[in-house]
Amino acid sequence: GEVRILGVSGSLRKESLNSRLLAAVRPLAPEGMTIEVFDGLGDLPLYNGDLDTREGGPAPVQRWREAVRAADGLLIVTPEYNSSIPGVLKNAVDWVSRPMVNAALHGKSVVTMVATPGRGLGRNVLTDLGRVLHDCHAHVVSGPWVVLTEADGKLVDAEDEQGFVPAITDPMTVRIASFQLTAL
Ligand code: FNR
Image 1 (spheres, helix red, strand yellow):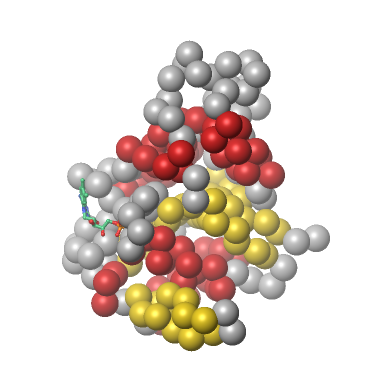
Image 2: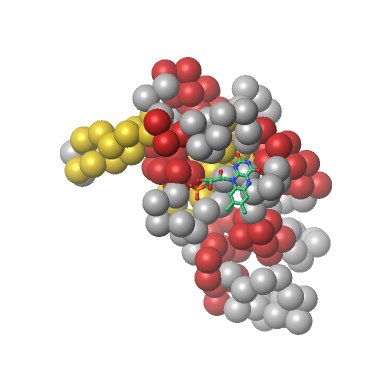
């Protein structure tokens, strides 16, 4: 049947380049795959073992865990902060890495991408995120990676049936992103 992928942006910013890249990648999904965006990372409390009860914890945490559990795979598009993973995203990963037995993240296939306005940056977050996800027993799709540098110039608004959606102007990035999705 249909392959259902959960798309997640590591940025909470309204005009986020990474959220725009995620939106631009959605239509690149191969036949039979849909990418649904989860935008509740900002509602998650900071991880606190006292909140992580046997009853399932706070409602936003339950929603996040159920969404990850129900998905066939994840597409994480995240900024790089100080050469690593933004706290917002690391916190979200921590929540789905527990409980230790049968965590929502266990065995999930994950594609990771980064958008940055910078020129030579962005790779470190994918390296760090890959290592963290691997240690959470997720299956990270390996390279070639989507590292969209100088992203503000490579994401434009394009018109489709629904109105204006972001599109990637760089053909090589489009090819690599499409290729990565087929590995999910
Ligand atoms: C950044 N930025 C950044 N960029 C990068 O490529 N490497 C880095 O290490 C950092 N470090 C960093 C730290 C902090 C705290 C902030 C706020 C920003 C710049 C970052 O890529 C830029 O602000 C992006 O636009 C953030 O992504 P969104 O919100 O546009 O998706």
